[in-house]
Every structure is written in C-alpha cells, then in structure tokens.
Amino acid sequence: MLPHASHAVTGEVIRRARRAGGGEECLSCMVAVWLPATRDRQMAPDATFDYTRQRVRSPRGHAPMIISQTPYRVSFAGGGTDLPAFYRREYGAVLSTTIDQHIYVTIHRRFEPTTRVSYSRTEIASTLDEIQHELVREAMRLVEIDEPLEITTIGDVPAGTGMGSSSSLTVGLLTALYGYRHRVVSPRLLAEQACRIEIDTLSKPIGRQDQYAAAFGGVNYIRFNPDETVEVEPVPCRAETLVELEQRVLLIYTGQTRDANQILDRQSSATVDRLAVLRSMRDLADQMRHALAGEGDLDRFAALLHEAWELKRSLVCGISNDQIDEWYEAARRAGAAGGKLLGAGGGGFLLLIAPPWRHRAIREALGRPPRAVVPDRPDRQPEYLYPQLDPWCPNEECRARTRAGRGSSSRQPGYPPEIKRCCRGSGP
Image (cartoon, rainbow, N blue to C red):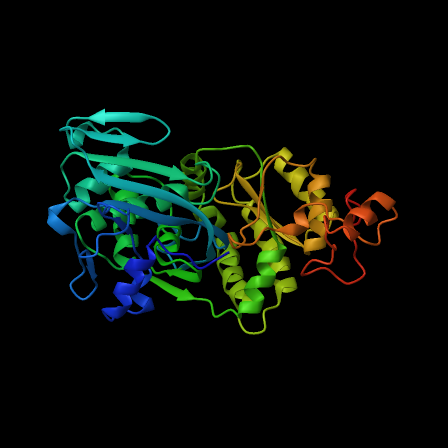
C-alpha cells in the first residue's frame, strides 16, 4: 500500500531532476522519457531533463516515447459523499489510499498518418473525432494534441473491479500526453482536468475522489466542499502502522465485474432520502483517519471499516448481493475484523482486514478464491499466503527437508511466536 502518485521515472531522469533543484516534491507526477538509444542502448548522453523550465530536450529532434504509471486506489470510507448530489448540499469526505497496482499508458509518434489506440481492442482512426475510446479522445482534445500517435494502455487489474480504474486511466493519459508536450503539471491540475473530462464532458454519474486519489497518491483524507473546491490532506501515519496495515489487508477478487455508473446513478437519485446515512459515512472517514494517525489503532480502524460497510450497503440495492454477503460473513467468522466491497459495489474486489495468520483460514472459508491480491511492496512476497516448511512439523519428511535448507521456518513477520505452519498447510 505504497504512496504512489501518477508517475514512472528512470533513475537518470530522477538524478538529473535533483541536480536541477527539483527535489522530491517535484517527482509526484512524472513520466518516463525513453529517447532513441545509442549504440550501447543507453540513454543518449546529451538528453536533459530540466525541471526549472519543465521541458524535455531530446537530441537531434527525435520524438521520445512516453510511459506513465498511475496507481489504483482503495477507498475505506465516505464513498458517495463525493457525488455532487451530496457535497453541493454539505461537505463530503473520503479516506483512501493508492496501492502498488497500476495502469500504464505509452505514447509514441506514429509513422502512418493515423492514430492507433490499443486497449482491450485495437482501433485506428484518421482523425481525432473518429477515436472511439472516449477517454483517449477527450484527453487528447484537452491537451490540444491532434497528430498521429501510437497509444497503448495496460492495467494490472481488470476494469470494473472497484479500484477507480477509469479515473486512474484518465490521469495516466493526461500525464503521458503532457509529457509528450514536454510539460510536467501539478497533481491538482491533473485531478481537476480528469474530473472535467469524466464528469463535465462525458457526463458520467461518478464522484470526484478517484481522480484526486490517483493524481496525489498516498493515504489521504479528501474533502469536497459545496463551492466545488477539493482539499487533499495526507494522513500522518507512522511507517510501522503502514507496514502492519499492509500485513493485515487482504484483497479477494470476487470474479464479478459491473458497471459502476448504473449503481452511482441510483445512489445519486436516492441521496435526499439517505442524507443521514451519508453523513454517518462521511463522519466515519474522519474517525478512521484519526485511528490511522498518531500511534495507529488498527483494531479500531477495522471495526470502523465494518461499520462503514454496513452503512454503505444499506444505501441502495445493487451495492451488494447474496453471494457477496455470504462471502463477507464467512470471512468474518474466519477471523476478519472488518471489510467492504471496493468502489460502487456490485462486484470487483472484497477488501478484508485480519491478522496475517488468519488469512489462510479466510481463503479456506471462501473456497480458496483463484485470485487474491495483497497490496504489498513489489519487492516483498506475502509469505503468509503460502504453506511454509516447519522444523517442528510432525512430518519427518518436512523436518528433513527443512534441515537440508530447502524449507524455512514459519515464523513470518506478524505471526505470534506460538503459531507454526507446516508444508501441509496446518495452523490457523
């Protein structure tokens, strides 16, 4: 659950940006700039990245390839209060974080006089108006780019799974297109323009939290005011709290996707009748950020998450269903302290919070779902999801393999000392 914003930079770009005096803060919204390689396939030595002028200069006029990396988000509480039907009456607020699952956008000048857009399918358009991918078309129009391009999009998780994929894609497109124009823009401008594309231009009945979460990155309390202003407040969490939260979180893919627009449209229409519930959800977002801040009370955080989910699924029909309710109750009986369905509801990922040594029992209770995503650091595997060899296992073969160095103790970080698990998957 890393504090990623929309970026993907090479080490050389970072080093040159720092030498230019940009500092860490300037690296929050970035793109990778791949210039024509020299004979040894290294970045051309005379290519420079000048943060002070926000320009990328490539040698001999070659067009760079731009790659942007934008995170998906996980929303904990307050979803629904970011809809105009609510925040134009009184302020709304959500608590969310970005995770290390991303969507990637690549852009390069195309030789043919057409634009090729590749996503779940491939389209080739002669003019900007002919592009059928509405997010690509409107992002190019907003940045004022109308020239032959090769644009591809790749996501780590499917669309329609509750992680704000459409908004992450919009922010990633804008980041890459501005990079192609040799410009580095602020996270706030990216978020505002992403909202303009999705809500104003395309008239999607969605809220505004996803765009700001993707553009700013990190764990944030985001407030939506009646005057249309948005305040993004980073939650001051200790590093130890975030590590423990990473160990407790389990994301289970339900295998169900849905159209969030339909659910959000019904939710907006029912706002007047559900104002009291939405106020409680908004207030829970504030309580949960205080549970994370300071010393970090994750037990209280999980209890509040459960309370927020009970409120959310009471808003309108379609947010949950019998199968999801059954999975959630089974996970609770197996040791989950709290959880919720991500996004508008109706499918996607089920977020659960439980002690790490309960994750295996939860997966067993849910029938060993085929896909479980743990938002952990990419250089660390969530070892508690897999059976471990145990030198105390009654199985002699297991003990022998462990002594031979082909296994490891099950005393993983986050486990109580008395918990031991063997190669047969025993233990909680």
